[in-house]
Image 1 (cartoon, rainbow, N blue to C red):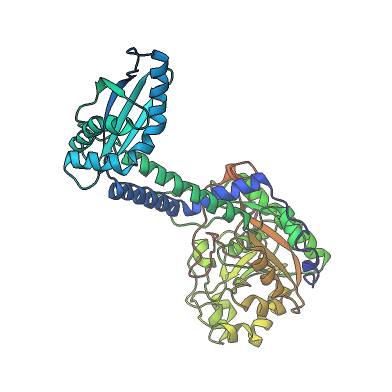
Image 2 (image 1 turned 45 degrees about the horizontal axis):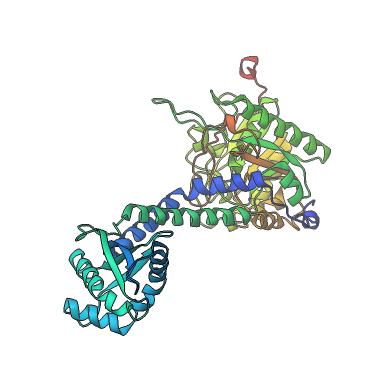
Length: 499
C-alpha cells in the first residue's frame, strides 16, 4: 500500500499566489457564473435607475448680475472701492441672507410665511460685479424670490456695507427648464459599474479560494505516487445519420495527441504493473464526472491493441455505462445477474467486434444498493479467475469519495489508478477519496490527470488547441465521458484485425 505517506508531503508549507493561475481561475469563474454576473449587473443598474427617478426633485435657478456702487459723502464713486465692496458683498451676503430681517422682508414681499428657496451671491474677482441666484422648486417661484431679494437687500445691507447701489446688467428671466436636468442613464451606468465591481471582487475571492489540481506538479505535491500522464480534453464531432459512438482511441477523427497521451499512460502503467506483478487494476476517481470510465476503457482498449489479453469489468453497478459508451448491444443479463447466481459468465460476457483478445463484462441495470453483491464471494472468485485467464483485468468502479464501493472492490484486485479531472475536485476531497483505500492492501500505481486544457494566459496543461468540447454526462452522480469499448478474448488477432 503506497498511500499512507501521501499526507506528509501533501501541501506545500507556503502557498504562493501565481498571477497567471489567478487570472485563469477568474476566467473560469466568469465562464461558470456569467449568467449570475449578468443578473447582478442588470439588477444594480435597474435599482440605481429607479432610485434616481424616485428621488429626483427638479429645481430651477433664476439669477441676475449687478454692478456694485457706493455713494460717498464727497459725491464721487471710486472703482477700486467698488470692487472691494463687491467682494465684501459676496463674502457677507450669505450671512445677511440668514438674518431674520431679510427673510421676513422677502417672505412678506412674496406673500409667504418663509422663503421656499436657496439664495446665493457670487462676486467676480477683480471687478465690481456680483451675481445673485435663487434655486426653487419651479421657475416662477425662483424668479419671484430673486426680485424680492433685489428689492429688499439694499435696505438690510446698508447697516453692514453702507449706501449701496445695484446696477442691473443681466438676468435669466423666468427659467423654463430645471437646472438639474435628470440623467437617469448615467445613474444606471453607475449602478452597472458598481455591480461589475462586486462581480470582480467575487471572482478574485473565488480564484483565491480554489484548491484544485491543475498540473502534474500539483499531483506530486498532493499525492506520494506517480503521475502516469495527462489526457487532453477532446470530443468527437457530431455526424448526422451515424450511429452513436464513444470517444476512444479507435474513434475516427480523434486528435492524435489524445491517442498518444493514452498510449503514454498505458506504457507507464504496464511498466509499473510488471514491476510490481500487478494484473488486475482498479480505475476510480474521487468524484463523479472526472472521466474514470473513459480512462478505464481506453486503457483496456490500448492494451488490447498491444496484443495483450484484456478484460474490462464494469463494476460501477450504480451507473453501468460500458456497453452504451461503446455503442454496441449487450446481452439480456449483466454482471449483477452473475453475482446473484442467475447467469453464467458466458451469458453476460461481450466480445469486441474487432479485437478478439478483448472482452467486456458489463453491467446493464443500475443497482440502488449493490453493497451485498460487491461483497459476495462470487465477485472475489470472478476477479481471481479472470486474473489467471487474462494479461490484464481493468475494473471500472464508482467514485471513491462518493460511495464505498471502490474500497470494497479494492480488496480483490492488485493495483489501482486514480483519475483526477483537471481543476475540478478540491484537494481535500481528493485526499479523502484516496484515504478510502487505506488498509485494503491495494497498491496505487499512479494518477492520471484527465481532460486537460490550457488557460487564457497559456498556463495549465497546454493541450487546449486540441480540445473539442466537453464529455458526455455520467448520470445522477457521475460521468462516463463518452468512452465505448467492446471485448474479444481468447483468440490471437488476425493481421487484418491488428491493422
